[in-house]
Length: 165
Image (cartoon, rainbow, N blue to C red; front, top):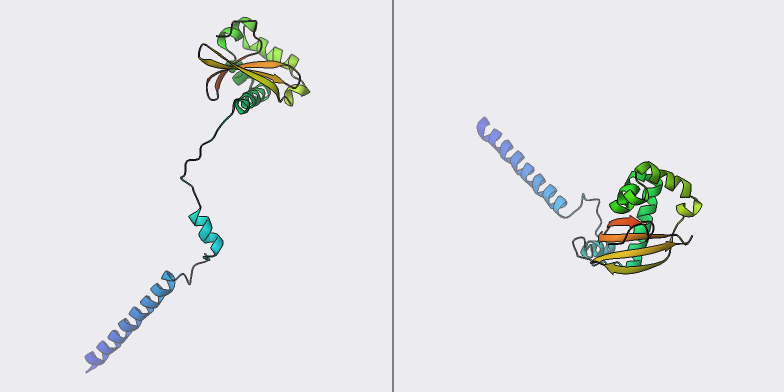
């Protein structure tokens, strides 16, 4: 008789546990315990996320001229070695000979106008399949950037030391 009574208690306990599990599952699936509120803004944000969409970017020659000048200016101010390496090899060997002469040139010509240099005007020419950007800053100094590919360029500080090719 004790077995029957004991089995009734076990069956009742299992039944109560099953009901509790179903209630918890129902509450979780309906978001009762969730901190996320499904507002109209959240729904629209998730629908219009556009994370994996392709967005075309059009870069003008003026944008590239400005980017090259800013990049070279930053190299002159922060990383003289990178600025020296960005010079055309034939040009830097003929004009400066070595890196020490280039650094001396930068230090002698570095001024407040160099720190704040911006594009005043520019021109673009194509020579032997390469684009050459001749960029004038506000101090009327010019820099010539030979574009090999986007953000891969060589710098000339004048157009008379060596022939642009």
